[in-house]
Structure formats: structure tokens, C-alpha cells
Length: 238
Image 1 (cartoon, rainbow, N blue to C red):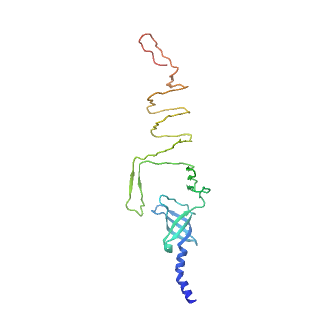
Image 2 (image 1 turned 60 degrees about the vertical axis):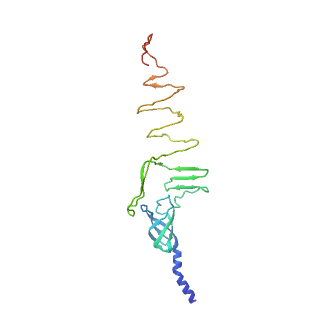
Image 3 (image 1 turned 90 degrees about the vertical axis):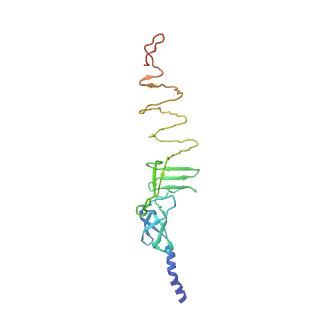
């Protein structure tokens, strides 16, 4: 019996470390400015842990809402060296995905959903921006980094490739730059051009069932005055 108590007492520190290796908690505060995001987490038993490093997968980051749930690992069973290896939020998780599907989501309802049959849904209630402008890319933490590594991105291009067609279902499309089209332009709603130097057509132009009017003068029905015999020219169109 005495030997058993001695062994049990000797193993108590090891048991405590094993119990502390993994635990869960609730996120209270987030510091997203660090090179590794830091969390304040209320662990099981209302133990408040500060400056918990949030280990995220490469290429992905998020700023979890207070109230999200964190899975914590204490390296070597040392509570002073705890890290958050995963943060989930059951309040906003996108539900009902099919087997094999992947989605990004926010608490506001924005979604990027990789669906079955090679379909991708991007859903936002406000604005979607694709930015390929020239800019400097920098990885900087003023509090921890003294040198900044940056790279200049030049000649950015956005390519939209569709083997069948692209449909823009919107009441208005605005282009702020030059529009170059190498194929046929087909329109059913008319054409209005204002400002600039007007329109220039090189090659043939066919108009079927309509007319062209310039300053009130019809191409089809205009007349000429001052008609005379011989080599004289007519007057201008009216």
C-alpha cells in the first residue's frame, strides 16, 4: 500500500500535465495586428488566458467574433505556453453543405461556396471587388518587425475565361476605361454616344430597318437643294 501511494503521488504532476494538454474555451478579445494573431480566451473553469497565439492554416486568416469557441493545446502541459489550434463559431457556420463541398462564410452572410459539379457561388449583399491594381505588398508589424520586405507587382491583368458565355445580370454596367472588342457586337436596346470625339467606323456598316440621323438630317430621306445641270454640285443635305 505504501508503494502504491508513493507511485500515485509521483504520477500526480504527470496526470496534471496530461489534463492540461488539451482544453476548450470561449474567445473574449482578439488582437489581429500581431504576426500571429493573439486571443484572450476564457478556458474551462473560467480560467482567463491572455496572449494566446492563434495558429491558422497558411493562406487563410480570420478575426473571430467574441463568443467563438477555441480549441487550446498546452505544449508540454504548460498552461503558460498554450496556443489556439482551431477556432469555430456554431452561431454562424454555414450548414447543409453536400459531401466534398467547401465554403468560406462570415457572420453577415457573405459566402464563397465551392459546390459540387465544379460550380462556385460568390454571394454578397453589398459589394464584390476584384483588385489587380499596381501596389506594394508588405508584411509589417510595427511592434515586432524592424525591417519590411516588400515586392512591386507590375502589369496586373484580370482574365475572365469562359468556353461558352459570360452573363451580366444587372440593370447597368459602367466601364471607366477603353473597351476593345474583337468579335461581333449585338445590341437590342439602341446605342447612345456622348462626349469624346464621337464614333469612328472602319470598314463596312450595314443598317437594316432603321435610319441614321445627324443633327436632325436623315440619311435615308434627306434632300439636296440647288440642283443645277452640268458639272455644278448640289447644295448640302437638308
